Image 1: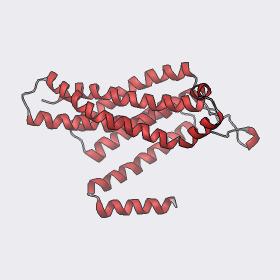
Image 2: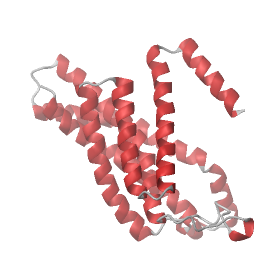
Image 3: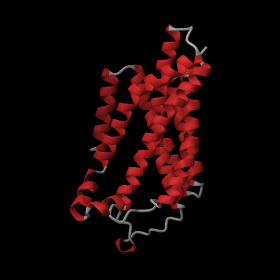
Image 4: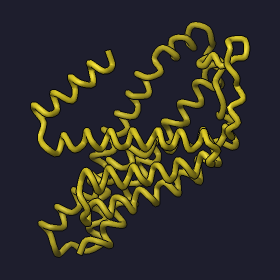
Length: 246
């Protein structure tokens, strides 16, 4: 069924999409390969955070420069993504360390010896949780940054006399229009993916146990950090673009 749906999707892309749309499919397939490379690198003993950062940088390079070509807009977006990755990794480490959300939530994953599984995967689970959060946020960060940098480029092209402060303020204004849809997208993905989990929690847990359960807290923190990164990248992109666009 998955193969059939994938073939129908690709066929529709080639029938009704442009060359740019077809190129985005190739980009997605390449990024899919990068994700599996991250997975195998961690499996063979590479530090989870290091493997994920390298993978996120490669995904950013492919998405921005292969799919959207090398130009001042994509380079500005790339620098912005790098800055957000560093900042996000720092406060994500702090939050994961003190919230203790790493590991397998018992209610969601039946990873138990009694079921024939081993819960000893010999991976630092806190580092792995940080890696998961970085992977979740990288997509929205790239999209938001590229949207802001592209819109600012057009603003500067049509208003060449704008000062750096005015370009920065324009970037913030553009970001305000973008961030609403980005946060909504993240929220609905979160709700749709964990709807069955929510139903399970509501049926068997009271409100206090729900908000303190690892299943709920883990996902809320992950999506919240992705949202913070999506907001944070707006002023960073606006600042970098205000300095690079002449």
